[in-house]
Length: 371
Image 1 (spheres, rainbow, N blue to C red):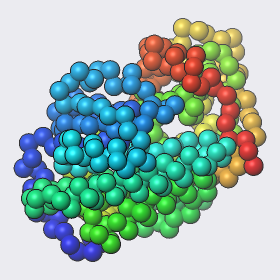
Image 2 (image 1 turned 60 degrees about the horizontal axis):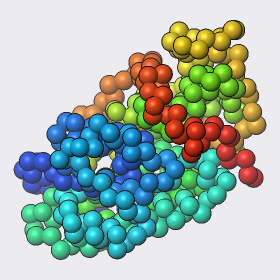
Image 3 (image 1 turned 90 degrees about the horizontal axis):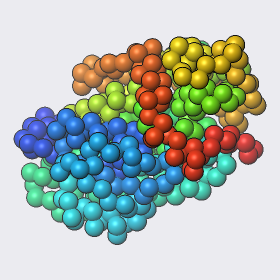
């Protein structure tokens, strides 16, 4: 543990003595954030304060099932707004923070990096300062129990060759404006822990998928393009490899790390499900051939269209989650085949969630073409 100021065992004991912790989840209306909020509230693990700016990728409909729970609260606040954040800390007096708010789409960062620098770097800075000021003023026991989890990505590590896995000690080598902004925010959190003794921990995850995923990302885009008989765009040869993590498994991992992770440490979260992008697309096509109410002659694979590759497209990501699995006892429950079938079935059954997005916010156009 970096710095040596904290006794992990004592901190965990104090934290576990809190019957139901009260936590701020930033970005709780987004894809992973909403999955985390649903998990915490449904399971009775925590009282949640969702702090979200409500950008294009946020969707309050993703939280409909918990919206009326006494354990769920929402405040529309931009994490770049220091005064707004202070008001949230003062109002709710939380026991910790799980920080997921971020601009997160690589292609959008290529088209416009400024929003990524503002939210992911300056927003994280403002949040750290608001949380540190609040934490510093707490009484001894509550101060010892307070924890801040910064949720990041495996893209900060850059690209892997054919062999090897990203470990917590892998040097940072970001390739896109998005991954560079997340790498910078990781460094800010580490520095706040080392400099101020701020009780922070970092997680770095592989590619998430599952229900409630905004349709600009690969898996929901392919599912919905199949459904609408539109071309299925595959970058380059489709041989880029990603490690796929079902979002509900990730939500459980985040709570495990927040509640039991060693302060000052990093934990990689991965599903051990490496697939080439073209394999992912073909598997979705096979499922849509079986399940879709809109069959297509020649099968959905006939819609696959290879397009010019993304600038700076990393070849392979793969996570070594051994530290999280052995030290904290977490393990992914879904393999790719089970998770992707659940995902396809969910989109087919929930047009009322995704149709308004396609009608308004995002119509499926390609992004990230600027060079």
